Amino acid sequence: MFRETGESIRRNPTLSVASVITAAVSLLIFGLTLIIQHGFDNLLSQWEGGVEMIVYVNSGAGEEQRLVIEDALGQQQGVTIEAWSYCDVACSLADADRLFAGDPVTRAQLTELNIPTQYKVVPLDATQVEILRGLRDRYLELPNVYSVQLAEEQLDLISKLQGFVSTYTTGLWIALMIAASLLIWNTIRTAMFARRREIEVMKLVGATDWFIRLPFMLEGLLQGVAGGAVASVAMWFINGRWTAGVETFPANSGMTALVVVDGYEWRVGLIVVLFGALIGTIGSGTAASKFLDV
Amino acid sequence: MIRLENVTKRYSTDVVALDGVSFDVPKGEFVFLVGPSGSGKSTLLRLINRQERPEEGSVFVAGRDIVDMPSNQIPQLRRNIGNVFQDYKLLLNKTVFENVAFALEVIGKPQHVISQQVPAVIDLVGLSGKEDRFPHQLSGGEQQRVSIARAFVNRPLILVADEPTGNLDPGTGEGIMRLLDRINGTGTTVVMATHDRRIVDAMRRRVVQLDRGVIVRDQERGVYQ
Image (cartoon, rainbow over all chains, first blue to last red; front, side):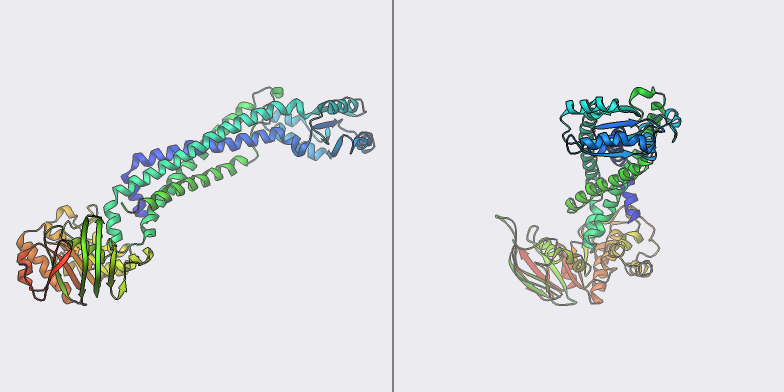
């Protein structure tokens, strides 16, 4: 079977290369979409779970000092606040890991001793911006409150940007994946046409349809996997260049969280290769079934 | 071994290839199908190996009606039927050995069986020493011998030949017929479509004559006419 597959690829080198390149481009955009989404998730990670307000507490504030803040939050629970939670030093350091992933210098300055801990607040009605602004003003006056940040100030722009990027890149990779799959479909169709004499002989001597199909399906699978591998390498390179570039951005540029350095890029690489295998198999499988009677 | 009952095959409403054809071929028989072009000879052969299905009637091969045979069982049927064609249908990028071995490889025969059976059948068809030649390095008669070797290497119950001597000179054609006769002598049923009067007259075997899709003559030890 492998010999037959190799023979088929050798007969159609230009089409095979075209299929691999198209698959690689579409899978690269697919992979980059996942990476970008993950970068945005990093940027917005502190606002997960409906959090609309974060009360930063001075580093070094003890439990008793925090009780004042918790009393104030407790008074509003069920009135304007649905829930609140305390993000301790370890939790805040983990947030910093994501937020300053692209700015290791700033991140290195944050330690257990100086990082502000956080109260994450989920309001009863997030659309009541005025009420949240009123709460912020009140909490800013509490002792040991370092700052209060509202999601609306940060989220709107990022969410819009995320939505824009996500919509267009998703549309693009879907279109390109279909194109790659169709190109693989056509490559297999051409390969089957080129080998129609062998297929005819195979059928006449009693080869099963699966025996005839499998080398062609394997060819499509290999093209998809090769495209996925090329896309993974390109994605790894682009991600590396982007991360290196972000490190040179100013700390307050807002881009420092928009990098992926937590190993997620390797998982995406694997997903991209698996997706390549999938589109290759779908394209070649449908062609091999449809054009068996050449 | 082969039985057709009231078989009608139409390619369109006004093109009737076979019209209510019935005939029997017992095991081990050698049958010539004769008749003008378009009389239905090739269609009949294609019905036997299920390349075609009739609109009406039944086709029995080795006791089994193959008309409604599920498609996943057709490969098994074809492993019992060897096919020889006028244009040989050899794979040009494969050697003599590889062409013959191909028939065993695609049905999953193990390598040790292939290395045993292929040289034996190449010897049978008289091509020993030419195993490594490609089709373009062989004469027409030799190519047809390779085609016969490929058809016979799996020891099929039936061998169908569609004008196997059509592209060959008379002397070479006679050699091919001697080979097919020898294969028939091993118990393999042979059904052969031909236009070659000399061969039919020389062999004096059963002759079934078709004309416009109808059997007009079925003669034991017949001649071409």
